[in-house]
Amino acid sequence: MAYDEDLVNRLRELLAPEKGVEEKRMFGGPAFLVNGNMAVAASGRGGLMVRVPPEQTADFVARDHCLSGE
Image (tube, rainbow, N blue to C red; front, top):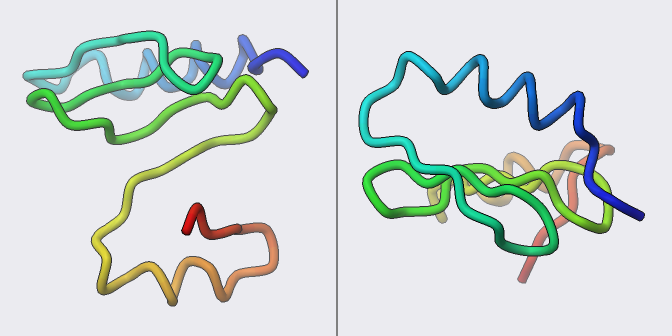
């Protein structure tokens, strides 16, 4: 499955006003780095990959539509 172009365009729009954002191809699709750190990516396997603080991982993974990358 290819990444979702509409999702990527929405991410570009949302992140455009932010400083230090760079778009780079990772994980089979576009990723957005903030000050050199990956923040969010449109996965080439479909879906959205989001970096969250480690102490908040359990809260996010507890949601029905979220998976852990661990």
